[in-house]
Length: 494
Image (tube, one colour):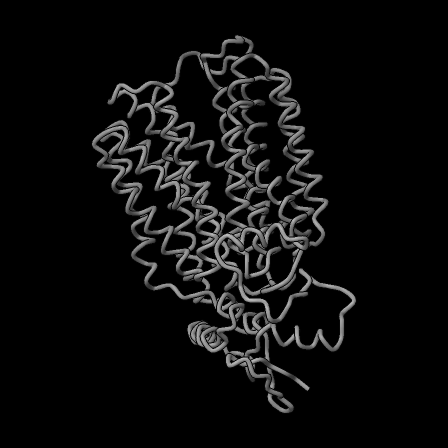
């Protein structure tokens, strides 16, 4: 006998009528035009976020020169953005998990677009700091884009599509470097801020054409609304839904009362059927519950170390390439690079991310998320190891290129694994908090990548990176499950 739970809460018996689940519906609908549109919007948001982060590499010196700022005031322009991202990562996750994915998208699109534009018209330093901090709050909501897109994608080849989504941030990074190269020498930092805000404004306007995630509606018990979105997806994709009635996961919970399974697939579906969705701060404490705390803490370490490694190798590239090296043992340029060459070098270096994303796409659905991350850490370890000693310019550049390729790949694979491992009820909160913790790694990496290298402690700097990679790889191996090919769960524990 098939059983289903309707919106009224009454249990109905289906002796003859077929039923289907959310994952069966998504598999039947397939990846088509509808998901392509979702990918385009989520990708636009991700690209806009990457551009707003990349812009920090260019505007500081110009603002400092124009307003006569100190070096500490210049660095604060970047620091407040990361501080805002810490707040935004957590807040957007709570909003998205408790009030809907679309509400989360609206909050980050509005904050980023409005204050990105206002930044270009900042009359003084204080206003610029305030505006950029609010932009940071919006940027912290980046995981909402990935979680929203993830929930429209069928299980098959989900990893590859998530890597394709991750490519948009790299496109944004390369595009911003190109824009800065063209705009900054001719028009200045205000025009760069204004032009860079265009994708943010586009994301805000196009928000009104988005659909709520059917999986979110499904998890909240709004079965009729979820089925309506699925029907729209099937129509646009020119496919059909399975025959019968969409049923909630509560059906399996009722069955579990009669028979207890011996194993689990992705996440155990043990849950009190009478429990209501947690609101506000309680969503955070759900991440620290006995069933999720191990997964949560491991993810926090992985996110923190990934940020440390990625942003660290970007900064270290500049330090190794600097003609101002106090150590004098490695001089890659005969003279200090001009502003134009600086933009060109950043532009070229950004291309290291493309092969990293391609390698991730090849590995993630073939060998799995965990093994892919361990392999990336291994390649990165090997790439950095020779840099403990001075190398020639070509070899140094090649090794740093390879390390950045591995670190961006690992960054994106972890970004796929995190929302997959959490249930829908706390998916964006989990991803948002993990991203927030990761920002701490981005804040502390200059102490190693800049201070140690510029202080002629090259071996200590590289050794620190190697230790961090080993620690992170161990954490990955400690994850309980592999999410490759697994269905997403709407309730449960890790």
